[in-house]
Image 1 (cartoon, one colour):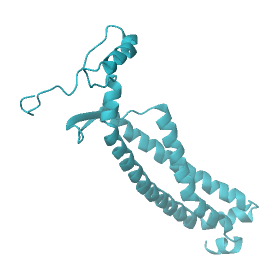
Image 2 (cartoon, rainbow, N blue to C red):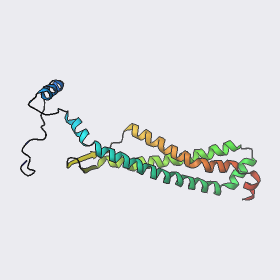
Image 3 (cartoon, rainbow, N blue to C red):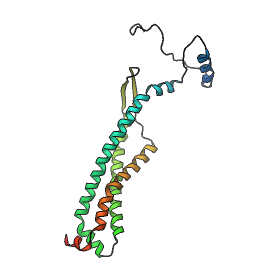
Image 4 (cartoon, helix red, strand yellow):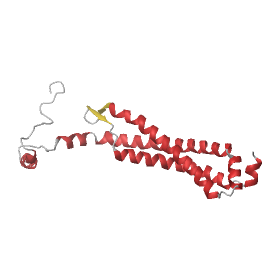
Amino acid sequence: MQAFRRPIYSSLIFKLKNREAFDTAKTAIENDPRLTLEARRETKYYRDQSEVMAKFLRILGLSLTIIFSIGAIIGAMITMYSAVANRTAEIGTLRALGFRRRNILLAFLVESLLLGFIGGCLGLFFASFMQFITISTVNFQTFSELAFKFTLTPGIIMGSMMFALLMGLIGGVLPALRASRLKIVDALRAA
């Protein structure tokens, strides 16, 4: 207190004997006219303290997700266009054998979904190592240290895999349409 030239306490932490007595203690503290205090549970206090940093991290994470998602979709699209170009003769042969356009479309869509699935699994594998790292930063509101860890939950895993499959699907739609619209004569001539 002397180092910061503060003559009064800014916060006080105490533990109740009974957890259920918090509401009673809170009412007594906040209704005492001698005190100008606000009573909060410690978890809520720290949640409120880290709210600005959490919002910043959410915005940063969303921005990076959008940028990298666009890159992943473009990468999937390039890969699938290359697959279509390399298999033009095969596509022509399949069409000549009686496969319909929707069969060709479905085959390339399944392939792009498989690429999205593999990419999602690899991403989750490498992201799982983030659970072992504790990240600390400074809370610029109170100049105290905030430490946090990433936790990989089943909900995050499912959401990530759905997102990876969606990116694979979006990246594969145009190449799959191109493959399904190839004319039999042109495809066989390319061989």
